[in-house]
Length: 224
Ligand SMILES: *Cc1c(COP(=O)(O)O)cnc(C)c1O
Image 1 (tube, rainbow, N blue to C red):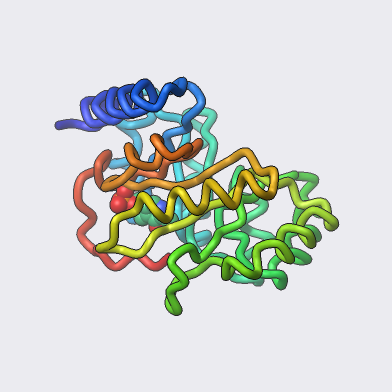
Image 2 (cartoon, helix red, strand yellow):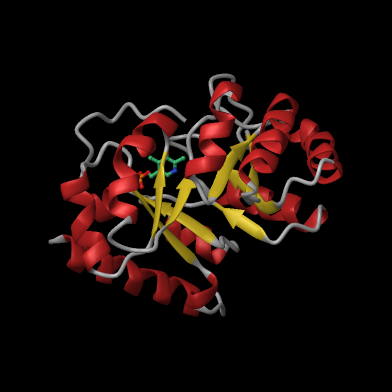
């Protein structure tokens, strides 16, 4: 399948999963995760009409996206771990951040948003499987992170998670949805190539799809 065909296929699958769940496909944003892909690999998706993309490294986005943004109006999401010293660049180059996961990121983000006059909506990432090596705040730390984000004026988009690999995702998606409801948050960034349909059935508003659109990544070690 070429890029346009893969895109049409994923959109059909999103439609079907939404219908099955009694939801509107228009309520679900398909984010094409273009990490490790070259400009030449990304362009066919742009041409096919895809406008929402994600990268997991700030530096990679800074190199790839300024040129592509000249070709179309895109919405760029950061889905990789964010270091404090990259907060300013993240605010400058991204339209959404999915990985606000600790208190120490809040102040650098607040300062950067003021500096650039950009309010970048953030998802709070939750370490939903309580895995030591994973990004995301502990479930118990979420109320504190949320309260501080709100009081400092961070625009909140919702919650994000990456369930443990090799485990069934559904219970983790359901738990994230429950946390979002409990805290009055609308957005749910969950579901990747292997499980986006399950995520949609459980309420995902943003699905992050890489390999199902672009084909296998050569380097499967993708830090989150
Ligand atoms: C790479 C990545 C994705 C996409 O994963 P695929 O399995 O290629 O669909 C989604 N979310 C995050 C945070 C990622 O790093």
